[in-house]
Amino acid sequence: MPHAAGLFISFEGIDGAGKSTHIEAVAQAFESQGRSVTRTREPGGTPLAETLRQLVLNEPMDALTESLLVFAARRDHIQGVIAPALAQGRVVLCDRFTDATFAYQGAGRGFDLGVLQTLEQWVQSRSDKSQALLQPQLTIWFDLPPHVAAARLSGARVPDKFESQPLAFFEAVAGGYATRCAQDPQRFARINADQSPEAVREHVMAALRAKGFLRGAPGA
Image (tube, rainbow, N blue to C red; front, top):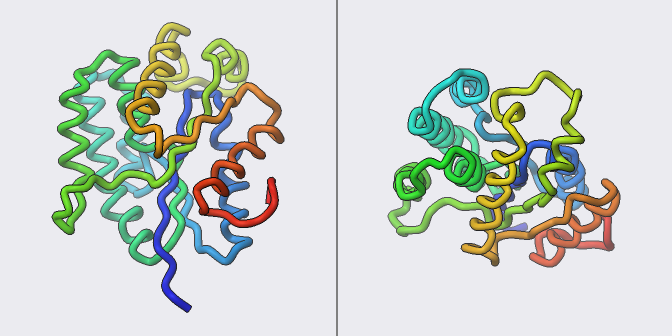
């Protein structure tokens, strides 16, 4: 049997959009079709990156420091988890990736997008000198109005420093995601997340089938 090519899928959206709820269903769908799956997240995914995650989510810092830590965590994550898993032909399902940095640190915090693009080039350049960046083959964006997300998060848990930001911050972040989607529409699948979980899941599975990544009937 030929070695399956690795597949990299990211899941994006503002806090409260419900993306994490659907990652396990996607993992199970791939596993039911015989694929090996690596579930991971950003910031995080390795011991070092998880340590950096706690700093980014909870410690006060300026936007440059925050961005440098996020990309440092991403580099370790790529080297330690994502690249090896893809080389082994696994399906990598990542709860957030670089689009989140452009949405949160770029649009939300107002940090220089040019600097973020430079960091993206440094951190995600492939080792094969192909000039291509390591990017997901598909990004599933759970698009949800910020006021709906805020209502979902209300009282759910003690918020981190991002979750406790005002509504205007999340409106800016949502705009950042929309910009990234417009810049690379072939990579993105926009999902209307203001629906029932069952309806959202059907749309997620449809997006995977449309790319040829999954076989079977809707919801399979």
